[in-house]
Structure formats: structure tokens, C-alpha cells
Image (cartoon, rainbow, N blue to C red):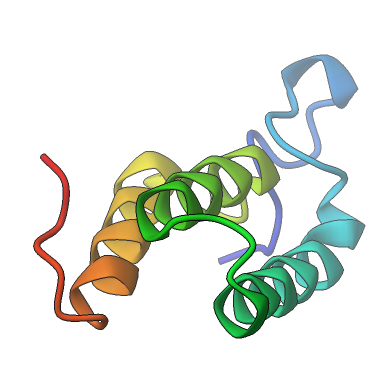
Length: 87
């Protein structure tokens, strides 16, 4: 499966998310930011989960299923901290 967002090779008008060449860097930066939010308490937990969900969706690392993966990541992030996932 190609590592690109949207419809691969069909031009920028059909691309969803960031430049495919930047996906790995953006995901790494996102997880570094999440670690910093945890370490320094920059946002309440529910806002951290919402920001994780939003930014992963904006990055759009997969051709399909980005919303589902982003929601699952946010739920796992919250549940790993022994808090029920928001509905």
C-alpha cells in the first residue's frame, strides 16, 4: 500500500491532508507534542485527546480510514490514563 494521502498520483486538487512526503515527520512531531502535553500539563486530558484526533485527521496518513483511526487513537489515549473515553 502506498504511503500517501487521498488519491495517490492524481494531482494536488484531489489530495486530502498534507504533502505525502511530510507525513512521517508530521506524525513524529504530533507524538512529540502529545508527550510534551503530558509532561508539562499544557491542556486538560479531554483537550489533549481532541487535539490528537484533529491533528492526526489533518495529517491524513492513510488512503482510507483516517477518521476511524484518529478516533481509535484518541480513545486509546484517554483509556490508557484510566479515564472513560468520551462518547
